[in-house]
Length: 494
Image 1 (cartoon, rainbow, N blue to C red):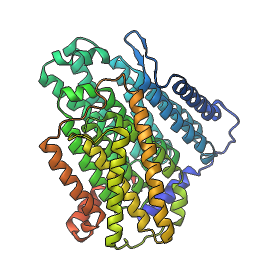
Image 2: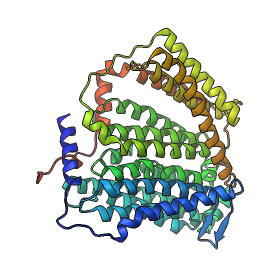
Image 3: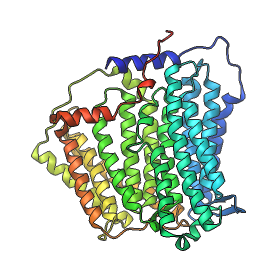
Image 4: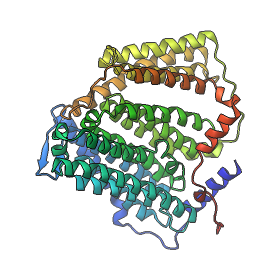
């Protein structure tokens, strides 16, 4: 706990460091306005063309469709919000202008990735994303811990880029074409072993960027970044794997690697939720939460619902950006507390289960998913767990009156499920010209067994059973530690 407090104090010292000169109006100060204009332009395009989104191509270099506009709008919005916040938050910070330019560079790299058709353009934009994010993490070049975090995360991002390059180049030379559209059209004619190996390389690249276990430690070590950079990282950068997997959904189906995504994503979601409960540092809690949410996103890809994964990354971006940008308020008021004793009365348990079940039913009615005995059932299971969790938090909240506890669950239930279903259907329409982005898989024994394990793990976590198993508690605590060189190994100049 003392270490966490020192990290926060050191971080505040470096972020509040004043330069000796005043900053006149410069181009960097205008970047937030530029990003807002970019967002508005993308949003106007969606509103004007929806639901018949245009498709534009420029030879073999780029291709623009509904999915492109969707991601452009999303990333430009998050970048505009974060840069506007940073404009005041980082006022007087020596590296504020550098931060602003890096924010723009990140936005342009994501926009390039999602419209790229040539594999060299995809590789360049993926590498640029990682490089820019590493620079944001280590934006304070005078803070040694930040520079250690920069070098540590950059190694991960370079490894991810090499894996992506290996997978794409293998496919390119096998198919004798260097365009994504060309490669995907030739998959059926390629050797199965080569397709499988290439898919594994691309999956590893996605897992690294989303900080999925066992590649999670880079995200836990990136807490030296300014809060606006953390918001951009958690709301945008880690979601890049969802974009990558959606672009290569046909490859993942053809290579029969979806079960790998399902199992790794599900295990990550459960483990990260466990480790989140052990943290006392606000930003570390949020980091573990992000890892868990990325696990859910990867899990949805493994079920064959890449459209649901895109919905998840959009909603997660909004939620996590808000939490990071408001995290300072919580830090000022938090202090160590004993974990609350987990008890739920029988009537409360019935209410939680009832709303969870009704949430799954309403989601099925509004989207059509989960009505058949296929992988869509797991989507409704995730919805049921989410609704049950919200209901549980309400019925256990001591500050709410009985009347509020009666009114809030149904209001949030209908509003939440309705908005989620609306966004799900809208995203599905915008991705409709992409092959195999929402293909329900037949139920397999692997899915059933893993579904049972997932539920058991979830209830062990919610009931706090892990707290009574010392070796498991210690294992989870060690698993959630950042790289040691990024935490106060150098003498402070303060």
